[in-house]
Amino acid sequence: MAAVDDLQFEEFGDAATSVAANPDATTVSIEDPGETPKHQTGALRGSGREEDDELLGNDDSDKTELLAGQKKSSPFWTFEYYQTFFDVDTYQVFDRIKGSLLPIPGKNFVRLYIRSNPDLYGPFWICATLVFAIAISGNLSNFLIHLGEKTYHYVPEFRKVSIAATIIYAYAWLVPFALWGFLMWRNSKVMNIVSYSFLEIVCVYGYSLFIYIPTAILWIIPQKAVRWILVMIALGISGSVLAMTFWPAVREDNRRVALATVMTIVLLHMLLSVGCLAYFFDAPEMDHLPTTTVIPNQTVTAAKSS
Image 1 (cartoon, helix red, strand yellow):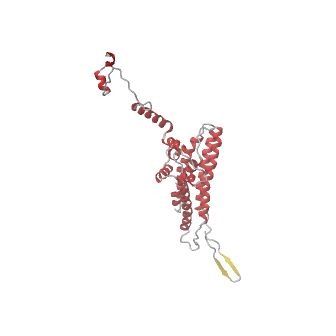
Image 2: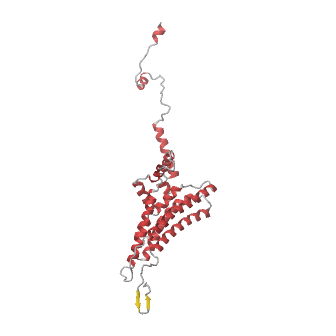
Image 3: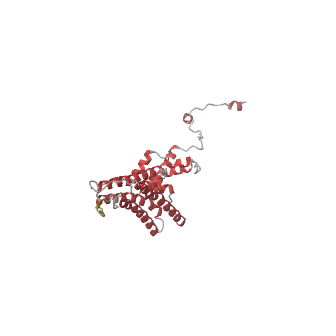
């Protein structure tokens, strides 16, 4: 019975108090196996962020890309499918416009602004605004140049709106489509090429055209030298955005192919800006109405005055 009396329940208080009372006692700490010590977690997070920042420059875009991949996509025939292309807030649009106006050397426009949430809202309205800016500015420029001439009769040219819309939207959609197809083809040849989606390429081209909106308004100034200076500034800014964005996508390819691709991108962009300036602002005007002088037995048509 003495052995039974020795087996008694004993209440234990705080572990620290028990250890202080009996230093020779052995203590066992039981923790949740899924729980990670705080000091280790902080160290791991810190080192991981530093490595990601060094390798990628900004890992926020990759996190959002992974999260976006987990979202369920709706069928393409539903309204919700196309609604995702316009799911962007005002802050994101302004931030991307600012990025297209102030390109940062060494920074990828797609990774920095677009990849987290590519949209069609900004490119669509930028192209629409540019269409009306070019058409209206072209009409005003024509009016101001010939203002005060007695033989000049102003006739609004509404056809310029449809022509500008055809040119701008064809460029903003067909060129990205061709570039996307070319990058996909080269990606099958060279495995290390960076790939962009078609939506990302359209987004880049759309935002790169924003600089031409204020440029088209300033083209109203009836000075050819000023107009060409403005077009060169706009071409330098928007062309640098395209070159710095698509150079990382082709630099692992053959050197000649990479240089030819970037030069073609810039050349097509140059043709767009110079073509719009030459057609809508520097084209010879045909708005003078012929004046007729009636003479007995003869009708003489006066030549146009230049």
